[in-house]
Length: 214
Length: 163
Image (cartoon, rainbow over all chains, first blue to last red; front, top):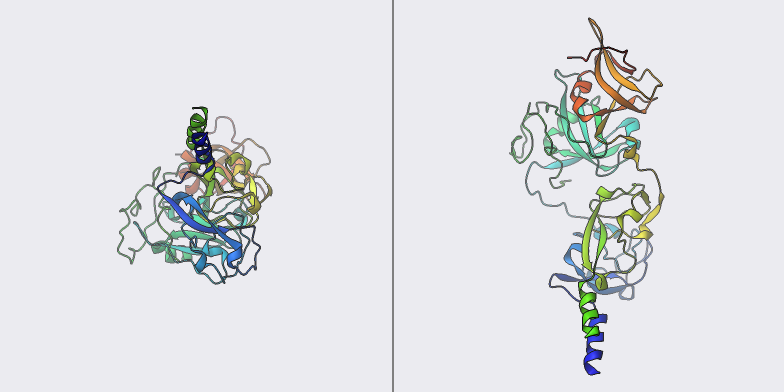
């Protein structure tokens, strides 16, 4: 009888994993504009993979802060949802520094979304070449696109560059990269997965996975 | 024994939770590639989390979701057409001079010896604005013709390919 009760209790209890993290979460759905106090929060254990990198894990760091947008129940609260909490730029791991640039994409802005890869092509060059491959961060007019920092001056000058947008499952086309000045950060194109000038871009070469630098 | 078996099963059961792979701004239409799956024991599942990607793909982001956050139904609005579904699989969208209303079109170029075909079977995506989808293999040739006298129209039977 006692054994059965113990086993039943074991079944009900949430099994904690070794890599679980105790994190402050919203105890109830919280609206934008709410100034957080202890009654709004509880703690739960979550696998590390479910704790966003920008989550504020300690309740003490949340109390007194104001929400800039709603938070769902039992969700960790990320810095971006708090008024006046800046998100520190992610450290640059490998490859060239990246930069976000505003770019008018014309009507195609209605088709692209955050996460889409786009190419900017210098069509009056001979042969036509790719100034930059980038990733859309925010759609809109202008859209915000993340590109390698060393191509930003060239891209800024080439305001008539044609935009290429891939459909689902499209491999990168075999287009040469335009000649660009050497990057100031010392990362030489051709290393770290970035094609060198004149190099043909092949499948898997699109250099869009480096960390963000704002 | 039965309880022991049930307890073991309870421990073994796991679920997949959908999280945001990137920052998803308001108005974004969710695609499968925007999501990352995290597996955890079912009993540790926070209430309201989305487990099945197919239930949220196509829905619009109503409240921004940030990279690594669990995707929650409260943050999502109604379903919409995913914008890039307008582009055929394996094609690239690029600007071109569209001079046809036909669905069966090709990108042709006027050369000194007459017209030749830059890319066959291109898809007109935005006719008025002049955007067409071209198979990946023909993108370099199509790009090279953008500033030349190239246009999207139906190639005449027997028209040769451009070199």
